[in-house]
Image (cartoon, rainbow, N blue to C red; front, side, top):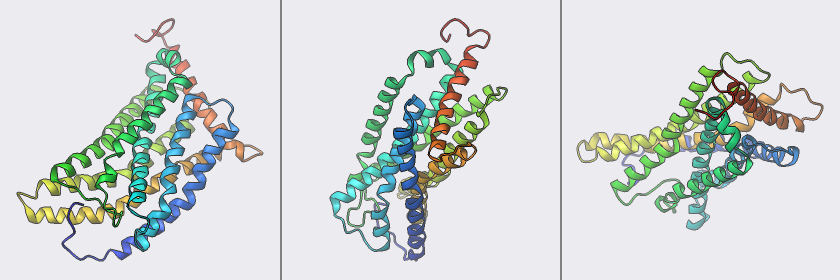
Length: 323
């Protein structure tokens, strides 16, 4: 992080494994997300707010995956693309991280509103409103990722330098809280409430949609939890520097190794959503493969409307807004 490691551990095997996984993520994820974007733009005439959110989620992942060749080159050899490109690439990656989790959070809140505030969703949630929310997500993601390039070691472009302990603790804590902890708590709460509310409902495609949405959330958590755990280890190391230097150094070394491992796992999250979509779409019988994803996304939007309609018709809800 902000100081060089004091031990000489063997890092080459980790670099080799990282290059392999990043290559797999690139080969699977770049065309996968491109297909998702192409399907939504070219195969779907009516794009609901849900579909717009999925479109921008795929775009976010595509931008992150497009940077992988540069990272693979840097891991296998060295960063040879200059400091400005290093900062730009790092900015894109962190912007993608923030936008992905925020878009998944909005998807969760959308479904929560369909169940618990169906009239508000019907009256206020349309394509125009969704576009404004998506715009705010991108602006917030750009703002949150802006400090990161200025703390990047542009010589290697694989590590970060901080000017002070306060900067390290503040930026890493903000990154973990806003980029993972708070959104994931919101997502988990939403889906726990939703599952308890609709488990008695039965309509075509409900279980498929539930499994798909749960898969997207779980995949994001598995891929990003190690990275943010390493952030907390780095923060702990810095806070202990003045009281227990030996433990601080051990935690610092652990954070360096952990960052190398967790970083490529975080990249891998950007290729998983298209694989989940493809698995869910296999159940659709269609003569043209290109229509399967479109039908899956249409059914996800239809299921949201079905849930809204059913819950709006429950006793005590008919005839008026949420109360």
